Length: 66
Image 1: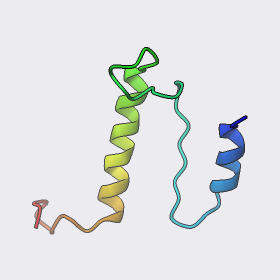
Image 2 (image 1 turned 45 degrees about the horizontal axis):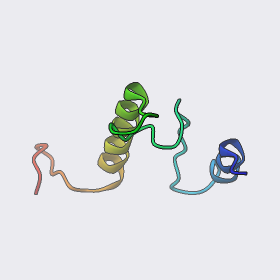
Image 3 (image 1 turned 90 degrees about the vertical axis):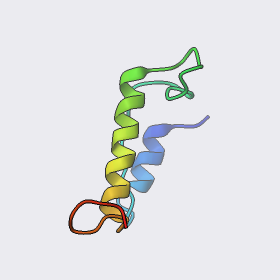
């Protein structure tokens, strides 16, 4: 059986890997799922955007996309 805590332990010390554990079950970010968790879905989306912003150079110094 899949164990998220074991996966977190295996990944947390890897280079360029961020691990976040959110409340919810498989499908928590799908608004059409019975397992949808709005708060966790929003948090996951914001964390993804921040990760991309931090690791991709898509904005120039004035904050506008190139």
